[in-house]
Amino acid sequence: MDAASRPAVVIDNGTGYTKVGYAGNVEPSFVLPTVAAINESFLNQSDGKNTGNYLAQYNAGIMADLDFFIGDEALSLYRSSGIYSLSYPIQHSKVTNWDTMEKFWQQCIYNYLSCDPEDHYFLLTESPSSSPEDREYMGEIMFETFDVPGLYIAVQPVLAISAGCSTDKPQMTGVVVDIGDGATHVVPVVDGYVIGSSIKSFPVSGNDVTQFVSQLLRERGELIPPEDSLEIARKVKEMYCYTSSDIVKEYKKHDKKPDKYIKQWSGVKPMTGVPFSFDIGYERFLGPEVFFHPEIYMDDYDTSLSDVIDMCVQSAPIDTRRGLYKNVVLSGGSTMFKGFQKRLQTNLKKTVDDRLAASNARLGADVKSNPVEVNVVSHPVQRFAVWFGGSVVGSLPEFYESCHTKEDYDEYGASICRTSPIFKGMY
Image (cartoon, rainbow, N blue to C red; front, side, top):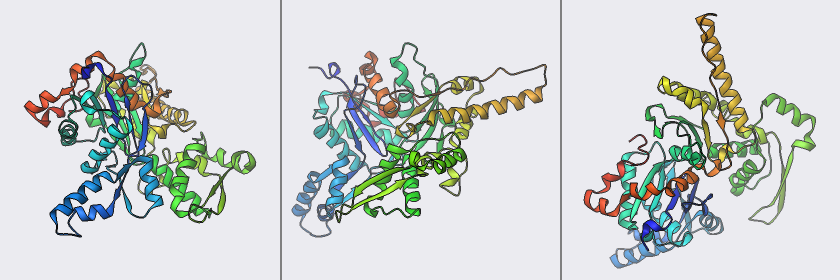
């Protein structure tokens, strides 16, 4: 069977989690923490530190490749044994360890999807901050190691916008607010093209919320096992945190009716088996508040996410701004907090309306600017918006014709991966 007649494999590479599955599906088949467990004893031998024998080094290298685990299995092995170290191949949305990344993809393809890469076209995602050289590395690995017949590398925010292509009226212009575990980007997209000069980064991401929740619990003196503190904070964040409309009112609500708003957490210490419990109070709304008042978490930054979005739109060409304000698209698991979309829209609209009112006051009563529509879009697939967008694109008839093929790679080399035929992004 021809590879073009099979569904494409879609891999969304994230700092915290990697989503893998087949084009045409609504959700990814697997969501894996982007982490690998490596046996350090084999690694040291393969580096030649423990032996001068070349054959022993070679065999140690093979064993290191075999004794390699990813995702939740890697985290479990790291906790239960002392011979594995953890490696995070993606840091702040950029691949920093290509050797580990290659092995990670290998496990995803063979162990999780159980497919032959030579039989499927592949769609991989990349951060808007990735370099053209990063695209070449991706191409080399996919074509040389996995011998894929075709490859498409898409910019993540463009896929988040294209997630709306499943509707009758796809909207390919808007601002993508992509909040992942390791990085937050605000990216303007106009007619499917990224305006690279207007991309803004925000220094708070999902992992920062986890760290802040952990810090609040620790400062309050809650007796939480140190080895599990971050994992517990992450679960508290995902299960109990929400975005408040007014932080002062929220404090008063908690103080007035603690039985209603304070939650209980119970667990067992992994090392001793002793049960423990603690209260979950103010951190429920203080965690997500760092997106709107980052100064409560970091000393050197005090610009809210809504202001960063406004700066992003204002730096875009003037004729695109109304379209961008009209379609602010949320993407990523850290946008799923209850009340997040409403709070963001309220803050952003206030900023835009205040500027418009000030402008009208300067112009006088005779000249008035038309109101600016501000719309922050929340949708059912926003947790996996990037992956779902890739699933949509991978299902288009034009997809297979637009991929870089193995024949093109053999003839022209990895430089073909610097451009994308469907969405040229900022390259």
